[in-house]
Amino acid sequence: MSTVRAINLVLPEVEVHLAGSSIVGQLVLNLRSTLVDPIVKVELVGRGCLRWLEEDNPELDYYKSTACTNQAVYVSKTKDFHIEDGWLDSGVHTFDFHFSFPPSIPSTFTSKTGCISYSVQGTCCSRHTLLAREERCLLLQGTAGDHRRHVKDKASLVAEARKDVVYFCCFCHGSVTLHISLEKNIFCPGESIAFTADIDNKTRKYVRKAVFAVHCIVLYSGFSSRGQQRSLEDRSEVTRLESQTDAPPFESTRVTGALVLPKPMPVTSTLRENKIMAFRYEVVGTADLPCTTSTIVGRVPITIAFLCGAEHHDSA
Image (tube, rainbow, N blue to C red; front, side, top):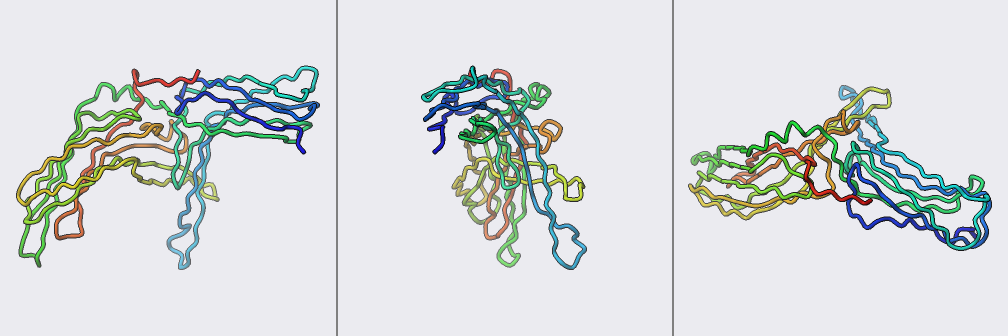
């Protein structure tokens, strides 16, 4: 039976921590009996890691894949507690701790290829034997990235895509034009992206549905087993909105809506800033073309940034 009856981390009720803020908490130990030469500590750790498989040599007749990996440490801090007299009596003992998050660390992020995670871990050992451990994951919103150049450029954005349609055995022709506009190009995590879309349907059929989404495009940078540098670009949906447009033939139909960004989410950044991952974003609108299996796609690049004046959730 372990000497430690229970170990608990008491953390502030903060849903999302902000880079550059602080976290104050307690480690609570409940001992069954006297503990001699204890080692009690709390650690704050933030890591990034990635892994994907790619074909080793496409020219070979057989398939052989190699793993591309990489990792980064964004924060690693330890608080070792001094134990007077070198022993702890039975009962409950409380240890206070305080950590500050670096201002340049990236947001919590998870995908099928990589992740960025943060946690607080409390441990109790005796003579280097682990007696008890508790780990709590943290959600963190990063603010890194030189977005001062973007603050001056908050102009509205417009994108237009047009696609021709041929149907009924090529006897009928037409086209569909998708026009998407945003009031600005910089958005904060947790903010809503209001958009206006015009569908100009110059066919004989209805355009029944349009889908609008925010896409996150991640550039991963890793190394193969031979130490060769590799990169992989992957696209995923952050949020989406489906609209039943029913745009009639030879008419223009307007669709308005809003896409709500989550929090936390990575800000627009480069590999230099995040070490192993780079992030960029697009608002993407798609509409099914009538009587075909094709779709029309419009893309509007946007910037996700944590600007001055954004809401600050400090856990201190």
